[in-house]
Image (tube, rainbow, N blue to C red; front, side, top):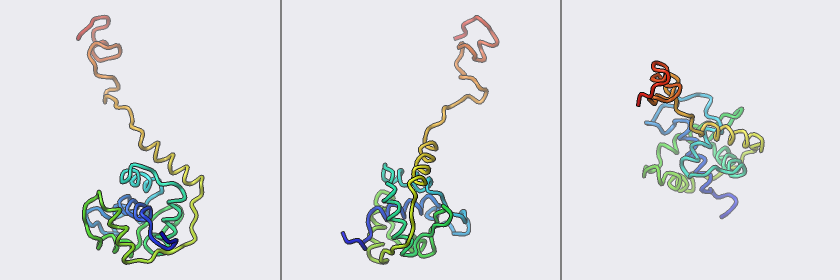
Length: 170
């Protein structure tokens, strides 16, 4: 594959950014989305959902350079956005379902847009921080009873134990 060709990773990052930003949701208008865009941790979360793996720092950096250079995305102060051209590409792609979206977008990129090469760098520390933020977000929180106890009858600390100390109720 030539240096100036689109890669599957480029399409994966683009689709992840589109979905994370809500651009694909019900053909949502750009004016109803967060104008600042989404953070890298949001893109990583969606990328993991799509491909069951997290993109490496160099994969993200290369993809964003090509997407920026092609005018499909914009990055400013750590916020990632889809441009009007990126929105147009997304809305006019063949729609074949989520399972094949990344491959479909890669084909569309290859046919419609030459990849660019913008000067953009993803610092190792920024990537690591975004991965950590994503991992912390993805850890399930323990479920708690609204009253602050387990809700099991007859267990120490349960409502039944408080009402009937020393008696088993279950």
